[in-house]
Image (cartoon, rainbow, N blue to C red; front, side):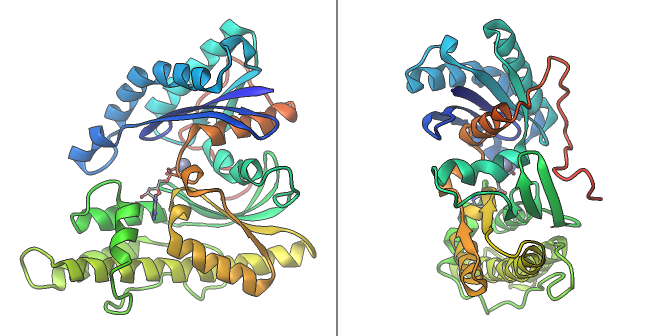
Length: 347
Ligand code: KG4
Ligand code: ZN
């Protein structure tokens, strides 16, 4: 079974072909970073237009690289939300048109579900990523702890009440003049820095819930920058702020994951894994700290390889495979959803 996956919900035009045997036959990505760089962040209108220009070529390249013909595809999946609606529309319309012309099913994929299920693609045939598992989903738009009970079955334990962590990384980078995209640059600068130099808050740490808040941390970073002598910041200042910020964020994530692990263990006596996904989970300090936590609690730790943590087509194609196998396909009346919670019961 060959499924084409199309991802256009943010600033990457991506397409991939993945089989039900967990083979990634092609995973093409066309980044718009250079187009958004002058603005210091993603401009939705620029992104939407750029997806229109790029999507056909990216899909053609994916099918060609996969060594198959369009007629060998068994389904077309596209991110149907949540995300920037202009881009999502481009992917969904393209996928519906292809599905109609090829007489194969169309599948509208929740972008968060694609991140959530990626580990089942990358863990091979083993039962390591069997349901249920605990998921920390940290990206540019979300920061949530969820129990993944099955395809289309999620229970949210907590979420951010304001900013997503990726957003806080990006804003910190912008304030420090590190440019866009910010997460990897903050991580790189943090490696040279002293995480104890600046006292930054750990919002909601110690509270008896699995919710997050990062807007106060971001504000404190700005105030810290303003408190330094006027003029350009030195390399050491930048590195120390990045290290202090990253440490504060990591401490909060570890505290909340520990609570979520307790909840998970109370509900499921055996098995389970602590899984991380989403762009911020590419961060090695965060990853290592959660690995340590998982080990200390006897939970297995799983994460997709870094290249599959940030947005890509393979995760959408794989979610398409999982949904196709479960008989969950969509019709031409599928409507893209700029907001689309994984757990409909969560507030
Ligand atoms: O999952 P993703 O590619 O897109 C969304 O669905 O949002 O996540 C992008 C986010 C951005 O905020 C980016 O700065 C952040 O992930 N990110 C990182 C790292 N790599 C990407 N944050 C911290 N450290 C990284 N190494
Ligand atoms: Zn994403």
